[in-house]
Amino acid sequence: MKIVACNSNLPLAEKVAAELRMPLCNASVRRFADMEVFVEIHENVRGEDVFVIQSTCSPTNDNLMELLIMLDALRRASARRATAVIPYFGYARQDRKSGSRTPISAKLVANLLVEAGVNRVLTMDLHAMQIQGFFDIPVDNLYAAPLFTRDIKGRIEPGSLPYAAPALDIPGGFENLMIVSPDVGGVVRARQLAQRLNVDLAIIDKRRERAGVSEVMNVIGDVRGRYCILVDDIVDSGGSLCNAAVALMNQGAVAVEAYVTHGVLTGSAVSRVAQSPIRMLTLTDSIAATEAVAKAENIRQISTADLLSRAMRAISDESSVSSLFD
View (cartoon, one colour):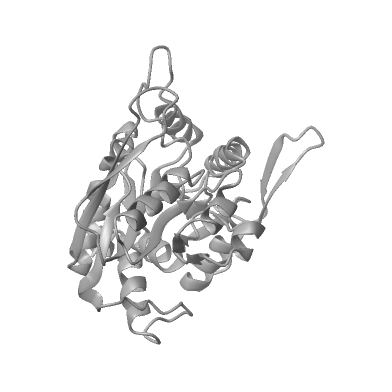
């Protein structure tokens, strides 16, 4: 078993390697003067079970090309099996034809990965579950819900987590906690976390009455006096998440936090979150933190290294991956 890291999220790759108690494979991913990607593996991988860690986040196309070229290099170096570990799967939001003459880019990316020589894909919280069906190879889609559950419970009982975390002081006690889905499409994800915590669930129904008119946020469920936690898979511009937080506060919530798996956070998203009613936005490290994220007082990251490393070990040992969902 060998671990290869491309450039998109080296800190996470190093944490995964540390969890597995093995060094990263000696490989280089660099650019020619015209910005073409060049990959070179400096040790023997013939017959090895190789895991390539690379999130296809911004710059998305550069990171995707690094992954594809690394997979091609491994195939030509006679690796026994190449598993693409993609904590954040880019292009996942383009999973269907959204209008006339538009692409299904997630399917195209799946085809490119298979053509490059990948034998298996390990990812986390795919934006659309049907993307697993775009591949004719095994795809393991991990969930951040167990990490979020442990973090929330650990913050209620300070000192019970293996890492530093701000205490979660819920007025009225744990029974006043409520999980909220920021849209109807994320209800299944939010319900899973609510069931794990055995708390109530609310839903934000957002709709745009007509073009040029701002979204109307309707809250389905009684959030008055409740400590609300918004749960989503991706935060991009942060607009919908922040608007949902405002709607919850307007409906009488005592406080709002958010737990999101992938912190894309484009443009002025970080400052938008900083100025919103969101008391704390918790992200995973599926996407490396930018300088702005690291400095933000109400944004924090929790690590996926333990979850990913256990999944990688299970794949290498041919043991159960689904046990990690519990």
